[in-house]
Length: 178
Image 1 (cartoon, rainbow, N blue to C red):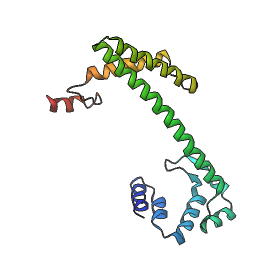
Image 2 (image 1 turned 135 degrees about the vertical axis):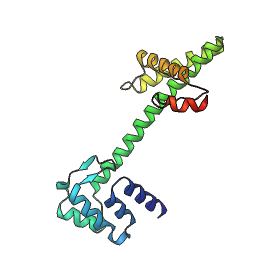
Image 3 (image 1 turned 90 degrees about the vertical axis):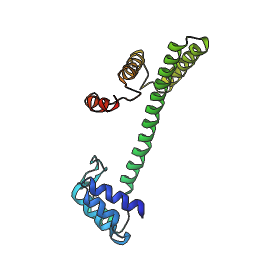
Image 4 (image 1 turned 90 degrees about the horizontal axis):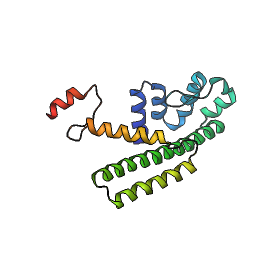
């Protein structure tokens, strides 16, 4: 119930009062509020992306929703979307982790060009090859490596006392640090 109330507060703050009321309504009438919203705007994600248009919801589907029976096709679409988003997020996380680890290894090698530190870079390049074999549709290319390493080096160079901020805010923040 607490999570529902917190979600309702978020919806109110985002200007989605109808969704907030749905979350706060007792279960007995919640379906009626949901059916009314579906009839007006269709099934939308919280960021207002259409899942199913309003015309999809027939009188029978709306009555079922009012009685507490959600549409199975919409539920299946939402479930598939959640699984796909998790997969995409995992791929992006894996990619970003490899780029971050390679940057750290490059910095260590620049500070101490030992065989051990060079071996870390070689091992990470092997990991990048494995990543590319698995995720050939979103590879880490030579250009990706170059852009990532130079961007991270630039960020380090622009930092003051270990802090990096947006360039537009830098004069304000850096004056505090000095």
